Length: 634
Image (cartoon, rainbow, N blue to C red; front, side, top):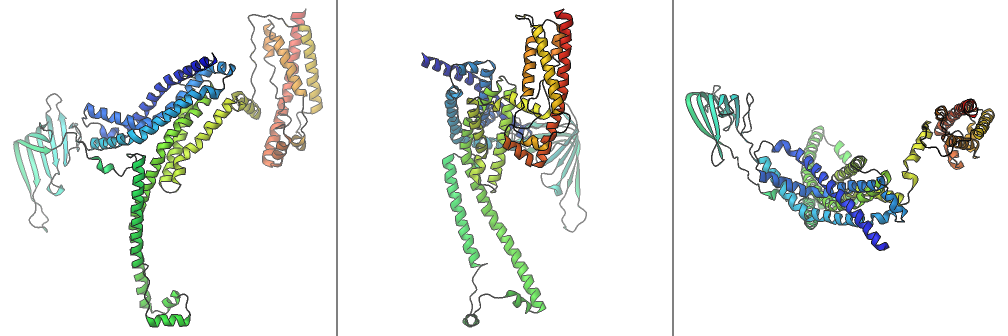
């Protein structure tokens, strides 16, 4: 029976997650596709592309963006799923039944591992092929000629070699009024300028040319000068009533050859990347050996000494040659010749080394890019797993479902991941960081976060209790909550007002005694603040007595008493004594003078606040006593 309940629980958790994951995945995929389209929209609009070409573009882009959409979709779905569980108290019921959080997450963890392998399959098998076809399609779409739509009163230059200006255009008939054409197809020196009252532009049946009809105009054409030194270039002027001409204009969509993309690393699977790295490394090594042999035979060639020179060097026992003394022994002309020759040779060597380094740097950059993409196929798959272990415990912590808080948190975490990943990868590809460390940097940062969140959430640690942090910051900045006590509709037990008055007398007496003995308005002793580890339980006892009185009088029907109860402050129990109960921490903070002074001033501020609170408690207690004695007991 217990096994059946567990199976039903797994099915329930999987069903809840799967439905949300399907929705979030398509939302994330749509957003990434729109972002990708937005990068190239300026180059693709106005091309008259057919629907099958656009459909192919969207399908290919979707296939390439699936691995990037999966981690964000898993993160968002996990946050929403466990947020819904917490918001509907389903997670609390599961834990109350003795089922730990890790057991609840187990079926989803296996599912995310499967999704990680799916992501790897897309990146290693489907992605490279789709990426190559997508880039080939993009280049083909960019090279396609735009649709001919000549605007009014604007020079139109999308037809290569022509600039066309139309003053007015009849949309119904297609007649162009007051047409001015600059024809630079034969070069600027042989430009032709045509003006016509009317004209019409049509596309030929084979969609390879534009057929231009012009009526009532003039043509101006430069003629080639026979003499190069001639300053005046003749031109020809022609007046016509009707003129027809063909303009080369390919309006068809032609797919380019994608072989030029073979050097890209993102269109290859892991085996192809490994083979490319080996070939590039072998090529780089061979180039390096060839360069080494070349420079050793030219620039660093060993000078052959004559027999007499070698004998003299051996007899003098020379270990090095002082070139400075040789240079000083030269005449002024020889010095100038030597410096000029040296400068010329160094400049030549610098240019030669720059060219050689360009070849090797380009190969090294290509190798680093291939290695990064090899590891990227694994890191994106691994992100599907650790994003789940970030989203699930966070959803259990915040206990908010829907598309509000989970979306904000998911976007912030994914932005952090994307910034670390893109930045570290870019640095690694530039050669300034180890390529493995740079590619895995985002995983090394966020994976421990997932482990930490899962561990703390499974242990129900107070580190994720928002009230703890609120109380901490209220203590630091001296902020407190206000009481909000209202009249109850149903009262089971009425207060014992006689005993309440006695309790209020006791509270007032304790507040007065404490205020008189502790001189709260004066500055505290700096040494005692950081060394006195004895507890001050008086304020804690006063606070507890006030809460007991408030709880009892909250059953009163008198509106004035209930309103006075809201005047009781929430007391800071320890803020007026020391920053911590641990003596060693207090000593360290006291020794660090800047921090110690700030803490000392903060404690002094809380002592002043406590003095004001004690006076408020006394006044409020007396007002309640007076109200009880005059209107209730009598």
